[in-house]
Length: 436
Ligand code: NIG
Ligand code: FE
Image (cartoon, rainbow, N blue to C red):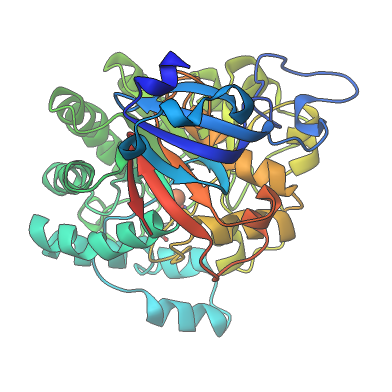
């Protein structure tokens, strides 16, 4: 009871979806026979009729209402009552900082021009690169704010933001500084990722979209010898990412980027197997990657490196949907292998201009056949793992960061079910609540 009396804030009469014993939250088991952790009964780690206390930005106590002596609590300390509480949502893969629009490209694609062809012809990522290079740091910040606010209004308390639309040392660092500034300016945690190896910038190609590998290797030199050391030294990046793809970079080039990232103590992530099976996921996992992302073309029989290295599979149903892909990631094989699955918006102007993580939960269920419980694990505990955050992040457990959401719902399955109708009552970041 003292834990409650001494707390900074207390919430009463809660139903908790703690996610502490939920699907995919046990990543220690590796490949399991029979029922894997991903196939356990749908529990969400539910605890009903509970009280939760917060002190110094962390969850300090969780107890049944029956043992909390409410008259002894200071009234001013009671921050909320009733409803369902979940961990704050974590969007573990976004390209939130960019300038320009790709609406015309959307029209082109609807007329049948493939994404890869548009990229090869100098559109796609490179059109966003041109606009992003031309934008000032302040302009990029201002453009990113409404996107960030849209995510926060839905309950996002942590997100990852990648660079990758600058492709020069100066412009990549500019993007990362904007990402850091967003984290300083708003009540949200921002993890930053250097994605210098996103596309070959035009100045490295004598002919536009040349496939000459010597140009690509020269650009990879710049990524490894200048971008990674500078981003690490200036503490602008927490991780390094690559686009391992025919229209991106080869496995050998990604290998060089991962080595450089490792040498500078940065975590590793990869855009892998989005459009073809180059085995980038296995390479990234062999470097102990936090996550491999997209995975539509991942070979279901080659998951062992992911299991062995605790690499999270990040599913991006928005990009799958927006590109009107038909090949799905090997969900059942990932589930059977006990590989934690996270879900993210991949918010970007080309393949996923969709700033709604709850819509992604819905799409993960409807398009990829995840359960609503797997979808919630995918944007809480498993997304935390994909960002290398502490083991208790993304869960409602004592000691965890007090990033939490209070919902007006009957059951947590509703979070993946109903989209567009406001259900969030309170968003709590580091123990401080704001009404939504
Ligand atoms: O995650 N696949 C590469 N990168 C982004 C798309 C970037 C773009 O088209 O602007 C993605 O889908
Ligand atoms: Fe992406």
